[in-house]
Structure formats: C-alpha cells, structure tokens
Image 1: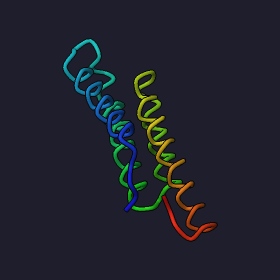
Image 2: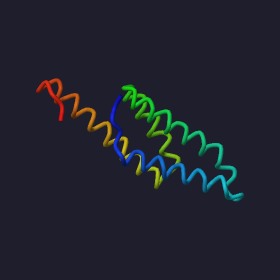
Image 3: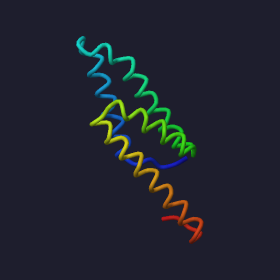
Image 4: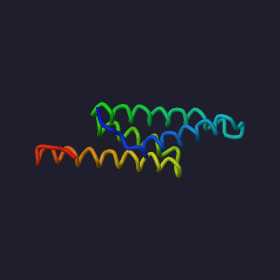
Length: 100
C-alpha cells in the first residue's frame, strides 16, 4: 500500500467542501451531479494509487480534479507529488537496493 502525500488529502477535503457548497445552493443545483461524479473519480483514483495502480489512479484523480479548478489544483499537485515520491522510491530500490 502506497503512502499518499498529505496535500492530496487536503485537496480532496477542499473538493468535498466545494461539493457540499454546490449542493447547498439552489443556484448551482445543476452542477451537483457532475460534481459528485468528479469527486468520485478523485476518490477512486486515490484508492487505485494506494493499491499500486499508479498510472490509472493518477489519471482518474487528475480528471476528477479538473472539475474543481482552481481549488482542485491543490489535489492535483498533491497527487503529482505522491507520484514523484513513488517514482523516486522505486528508483532508489532499483539502483541502491534500499529506499529512503
């Protein structure tokens, strides 16, 4: 199971807050269903990254975060950092035989 960056969780929390905000205002009710779908894509993507399906999970997470721009970029940056950390860890294992 992969360790996910804290920024990713913060971004997911912000996305959830935006989802609740959209759901509470009648003016934005037409955006609620697309927001739920985008949020579920983020959650599914995060779970896939955690279970070592990094490529598919990160793509789903990025697609879900696009709906929540500009605040959704927090989550996208977090998952990007997580992927970078995982690649670095994999490289260290292959080259040096250990990880950080």
